[in-house]
Amino acid sequence: MKALEPIIKVTGLKKSFKKKEAVKGLDFEVQEGEIFGFLGPNGAGKSTTINMICTMLAPSEGSIIINGYDVSKQKDKVRESIGIIFQENTLDKKLTADENLKLHCRFYKVPKEKREQRIQEVLEIVDLVNERKQRVETFSGGMKRRLEIARGLLHYPRVLFLDEPTVGLDPQTRAHLWEYILRLKEKEGITMFLTTHYLDEAEISDRVAIMDEGRIIAIDSPKALKSELGGDIIELETENNVSASEEIRRRFPEAEVTLQDETMYVKVPDSDAFVATIIKELTAPVTRLNIRRPTLNDVFLAFTGRKIGEAEEQGKAGS
Ligand SMILES: Nc1ncnc2c1ncn2[C@@H]1O[C@H](COP(=O)(O)OP(=O)(O)OP(=O)(O)O)[C@@H](O)[C@H]1O
Image (cartoon, rainbow, N blue to C red; front, side):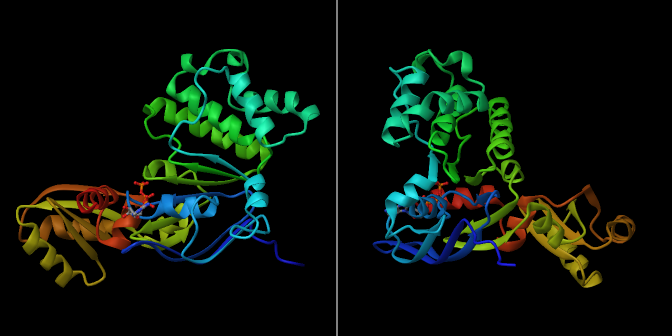
């Protein structure tokens, strides 16, 4: 049997801005129907990559194939194959939802006889059927984002790009938006490529690529990435973390110890035996102890030596 062609294939992708090498050589594939998440701190190179994939920025090197079309040679075919929902709101606020959608249908040459049915379908997906005749300026932030998603779907794209789709929304609206996105996957079987720096949101993805400083440092399902870490994470504070971490490393050679501010993160295959021993025998008394399953933040920490929030702070300081 012939193996399925990936819907997106990226090879040797690089981008430099003058002296800054923002994307340093990416190779990855996205399969049809996947939710593919790009996770990384500000400045990691996510937007630059997504802009190149969406034909909006020319790569310095490498190739991108979407839906069988070459992004640098067949831009129009690529644009027909994709829908884009970016951070900036590009709806016309003075127009109604309906007028915004009709405009987009004309722009993307959705056949006239299909327009009415398609507008109804996409409004149903994002629950805005009753607001169809309202002006966009009366919409809440969440409603606007939903309308943008509806608009991005009008021309039956094979891949939908969502760049930080929940930025600026409150937690409840964020959660709802993800429900719509999952509904979309169910109803339209569409491939979704999303970027986020919210770790909990990345969990929705079938696969996640973790990006840092222009490179993909890990790529797999959230479950596999976390289980690759193996064992439990023990958060530990003692009266002297430096000497305690040295003692742990000496006595438990299999333990991986990372010191972060006031807290030690210890990863061990068997947390029960470890905890029983350190509580009784560690020279520096234990002042706090918490055992938990690994999160994507731990994956990021394991690969980069820092938490995703800290990487962002460094990114901001450096830019
Ligand atoms: N047009 C540009 N000119 C010069 N440098 C740029 C340009 N666009 C991006 N960069 C730099 O490239 C690096 C990657 O930026 P990019 O916006 O792709 O990161 P990101 O991961 O998408 O971050 P964010 O979440 O903040 O959008 C950053 O150091 C940024 O300052």
